[in-house]
Amino acid sequence: MNEYSVIKPKWSIVRKAQIIGTLIGISLTILFTLLANRSHPPTVVHGYDATAMSESTAYTLLVGLPTIILCNVFGCRSLMDAADMGTTHWILAEGLILVVNATLSFIVATIVGLAIKERSSIGARTSGTPKRG
Image 1: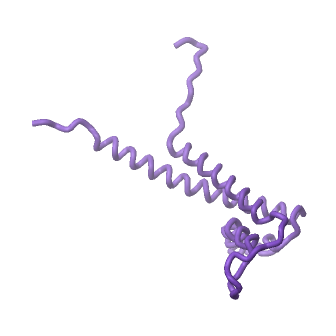
Image 2 (image 1 turned 90 degrees about the horizontal axis):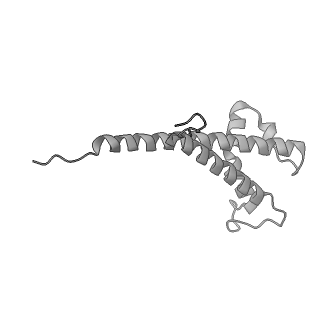
Image 3 (image 1 turned 45 degrees about the vertical axis):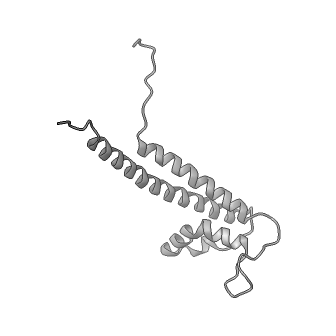
């Protein structure tokens, strides 16, 4: 190996899972936020009963529920109040939703990565050549 060769670091399976999971979480948050804020008349998801909600409301709840729960727990309910799209309040709320969902995706991906690492290490310890005899 000469002095100019580059040593490429190897990423662990946990780090790969964290990056992939966080990117998936951010992408899905942005996708559902765009679906929730598209500018055509809302359609009803369920029938005409009392539990009916529009697609926009359903997507907003799907994406924003973890943030809404955290805001209620910490007492900052006014942050998640309905605001017009494009205002500073709306941008702050959507940014908070993005950060919370990315953090939750990171945590879930870390757990999955650790489980995969543990499973692969168990497989490596138990695999081997069987003894003949």
